Length: 87
Image (cartoon, rainbow, N blue to C red; front, top):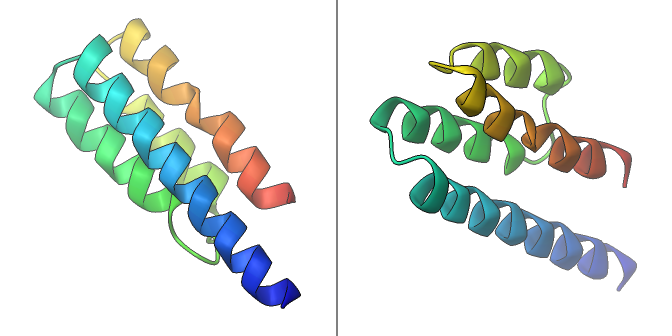
């Protein structure tokens, strides 16, 4: 039963991250390149189990953003990755 709860919790966290990413993408920064990077980050965060180099992959994706605003918005995913990694 504990495993089921953990899997359910993980699924819920993944949905929250996906919802946040979509809202961020559509409302704040309607750029095709940004959308592509955001989708890649969302897929990375929804990978279970997380890759050992998830932080490095996330950093590489963020560095590809076109400007400081895009990098800032994408860097918010570090918090989600931290939560997923340490819970």
